[in-house]
Length: 184
Image 1 (cartoon, rainbow, N blue to C red):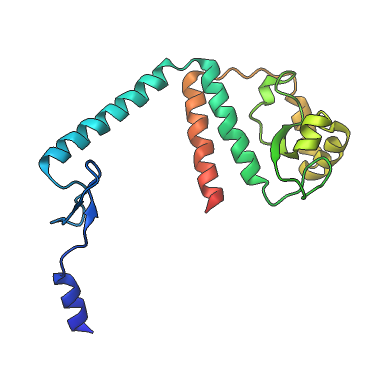
Image 2: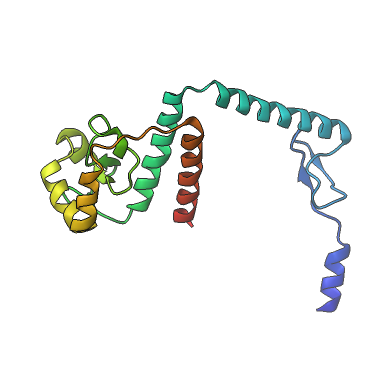
């Protein structure tokens, strides 16, 4: 057994593909990702350009674009959080596609747009074709949240939520982390 361990220490590393030119090469370190200094320079330049490009795109986004991006991430979180649950309104589990259905709509109560108690997994039929199926949603929400949290949700109905750009970016990161944790 000791011979095998020693033998494996002296074996040459396996061939790797250069991240720049995509050619196979024999690395002299296990952490080496490019084949030569030319490729290393080019790869570093490309990485810097990608980072700069990302910063340029991020800095040119409007507040509305950031809110829309947050909405996509938030809705993904809701669908992932409730993936094992049925539709909150009709209780179906047969649907192929689910939405993140808002009890209080984004248009009527923008302050509750990103409130996790206000948004639950809802089938396409209920969300789109039955306009939220609110009567059944209301019944299920009282049971799911309990009367205290349900009353708290109603109390927040008239509040105002004004997120800054930095707060929106932070929320995007928070929900991305939550999604990663749920997928583990």
